[in-house]
Structures are given as structure tokens and as C-alpha cells.
Amino acid sequence: MECPNCNSVLITIERNGVEVEYCTECKGFWLNVDEWELIKQALNIQNKTDDIMLSNDCVKADTNERPKNCPVCFERMEKINVSGVVLDRCLRRHGVWFDKDELSKYINSGNDTNTDNTVYFLGEFFKN
Image (cartoon, rainbow, N blue to C red; front, side):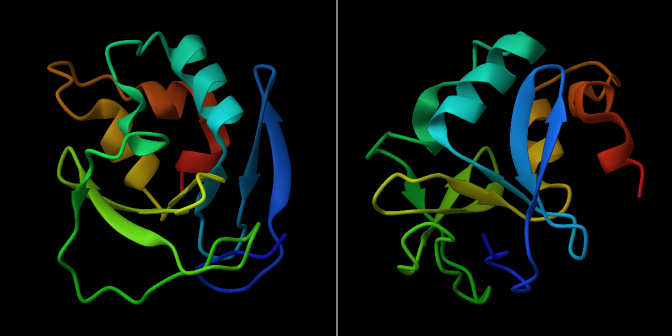
């Protein structure tokens, strides 16, 4: 699978029983619906809705950011604005692409504490 951002080969990383596709070049993450569910459970963020994966009610993002193609079906993904973070989502619901730091920003949006749950969960992948 190729990175939708820089076309590098994505590697599969496993952390706490959850596998995600990760780009070692641009530090982005590809998550499918199943992976997202496991991350929500692992981080105890059930208050986050499934809007990023399945909902048709997402706000389309108005951005000049370069379009990206889904690494599964190769179709152009839509830009959605969720909690102030612009994400790339496959129209066929294969998954969502998170550029560097977007996964952390989204998961921790609305978090009143200084604890970054994604750094704790994914560890070394968020240190650079």
C-alpha cells in the first residue's frame, strides 16, 4: 500500500494489539473502520462519534490542500473538517488518512487535560 501523501510504501505497525498503516517518510497514518474502532476502545474515547469513518453528516472542508487518493481503491478522497482538523476520507469508506499530528489533534480535541492519549498509545511514532 502506498502513502496517499508522498507515495512511499506504508508499513504496518502493531501497538497494543492494534495494527495501523504508517508512513515512515511523512509520518502519516491510514486507518480503516476496524482499526479506528480498536483505537477508540484502547484509548477509551467512546465519546468520539464515528463521523470520521461512516457519517454522511461531515462538514466538507474548504481548503487549498492538495487532493489525495485512497491507497485502497485509488479514487480521490474527500476533505472533511472534524473538530477543526481537516482529514482525507475515502468516499467508499475504505478509511481515513491522517497527516502528521492530525490523529493526535483529532483524538485530543476537546480534551481539557494536557495528557496526549495518542502519544501514550502509539508511543515512539509521535515523538518526532
